[in-house]
Image 1 (cartoon, rainbow, N blue to C red):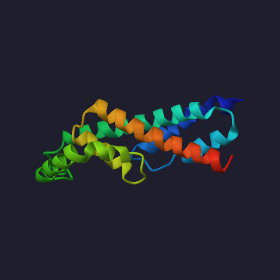
Image 2: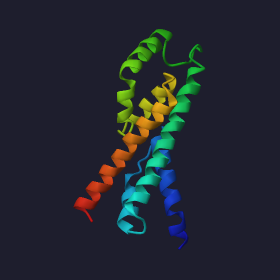
Image 3: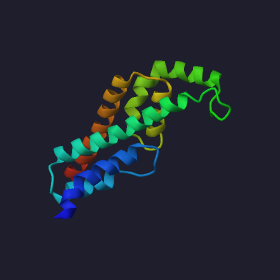
Image 4: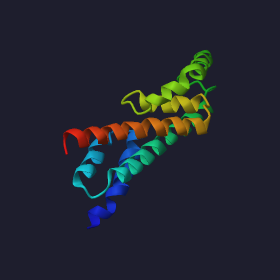
Length: 147
C-alpha cells in the first residue's frame, strides 16, 4: 500500500530529473506504471509531462544564470560566439525547442534557451507540447503493441 502512495511522486521526480542535465531516463518508470494498471494513462501522462517540463524549466533558469558569467574568463563561449548563437537561436530557436524531448540534445537546447533569454512563456508552451507528445506516443505504442 505504501508503494502505491509513492508511485506518482516517484514518477514525477524521475521525469523531473530526466529532464535536467543529470543522466537518466523516465520511460521505464512510466511504462511500468502503465503496465501495472493502477492508474489511468491520462493521469500518468499528466504527471510525467509536468515533471519533465518542470525539469526543463530548471535547465532554462540555469542557462539564464550562466549568462551572468559571460564576461568571466572561465565562461565556455566567447562574446562573438554568443552573439552568433543568439542570432541563430532567434531564427531557429523556437523550432529547436520542439526537440527538447530528444535524448542527448534536448537538455542542452533548453539550457541554450535560457542563455539566449528566450521568452519564458513561449518556452514553457513549446517544451510542454514536445514532452507531452513524446509521452503520448510512448504510451500509445506501449498500449498498441505490448498490453
